[in-house]
Length: 268
Image 1 (cartoon, rainbow, N blue to C red):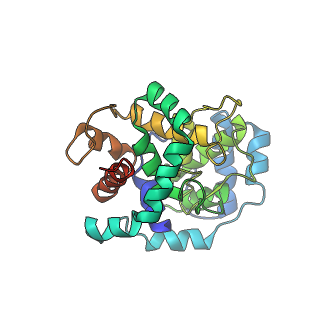
Image 2: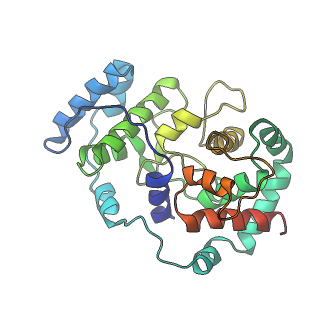
């Protein structure tokens, strides 16, 4: 659901973007040269920067999509949840709870986030990794949005984070694809979230939020734990855990949907 993903991308975090100095607007190639220098000064190797940004061009479709978004929900909770949480998604989530029971137990023990919340987020974002994770080259998407002057500081920071994902070897550039604001993987992390909260839970030496179920679920749990989510406490509207989920998405209607779906998974 692209509009939702775009909302999540803007609302997922309070970003601590570096003080980048590339001038937005103007000639795109000049901007790319400037942001390349900024990335290298921030510790990204010249080889990674050159390979990632070689031949990059503006994406008019990304700009058009960004300008269409109003980042608001125009449905009631009842209307919205009826389109997102139906019998098929509930049954699918229950199947994931069974299939990954041992993994989810380990994650609960380490991070203190209940399995039903993690599976609810996973299901809502990409139907447990089986749905649309986005197909746009993340570097091109973020370079386009960073060049645009509306939120250049935000997206310059995201572009730098995406280059760091490449430098760390978490994903290849071929796999670094995502949605219209650069969201990546099965629970749609922005690159800055990927760097800040990503966990190598399967122990293969890299954080892979596109292909590794263990990394996806543990990283999602790490974000929530870091935001103050507490195991065993309520997560309904008005609770401390509901507020902690604001770090995932500021929209009340979306957080209510997470909680509703989580309860349905547990037969409540």
